[in-house]
Image (cartoon, rainbow, N blue to C red):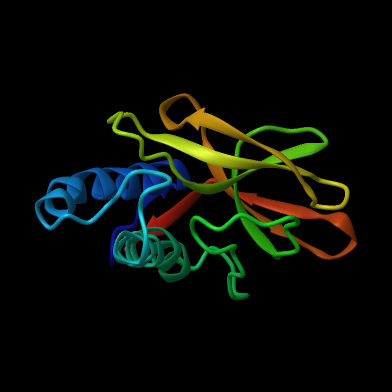
Length: 157
């Protein structure tokens, strides 16, 4: 029998942030811009590959649900969030803080840039930076009839 180990979505984002921070010295050695506002295709491709493999791939492989994930792309800003799935900084109420990216400004503290999204119509109404260590993150799956499933932990084998 294979033993399963639980990992939270927050921990997955922490691992992802640590991987990005670990890449910075190599990017600097190769003169690849990595700071927010300066980064371009090379850094973006590395960050997106890590996102897909460390965060999205882990959630998919753990299989908390049988339907496929439809998440927004990493580090993309949208006017609205019609996606069936989003990673959200925890909180209840009429708004969601949807994870967009890890803030990379030279500070080695994991912070998340999140889109403030109205739950009623999923329109982006602003942005907010949230300290990852002081918040929890979950996967929100929007269902039919306004039902939402919140998944905060996945199980690895």
